[in-house]
Amino acid sequence: MGFGEYPAEYNAKVHGPYDPARWYGKVDTPLAQTKLGELGAWLGRRQKSPQAVTAAVSRGYWRWLHKYVHPKRSGLTPFLQVIAASSAFFYVLNYTKIKAHRIHKYHW
Image (cartoon, rainbow, N blue to C red; front, side, top):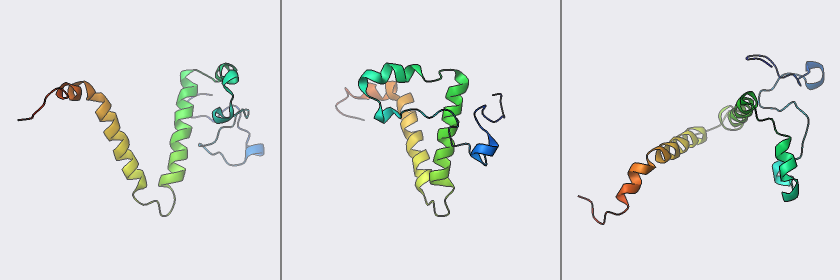
């Protein structure tokens, strides 16, 4: 699978129209249904290449779009989620500067 191509597992005759939010590979046990003893084997079956990680992030993004952005009456939810995620991201970036103020009893 190269950049801009369909996944190798996708077959138009079997799957119908292509959906970028769907995984077309072999069905596996979800993480929530995996027992603790089987966790090592479950992690061993995952693809760990940069291309696989990029594809997983892309599928997650498309699922988020289908659920929150594309409905007719989506409302403010996607905008508020982006604001909350960016606030958390910048808090983590600036945490070293913010934690220096914990020891101050009073502010000027």
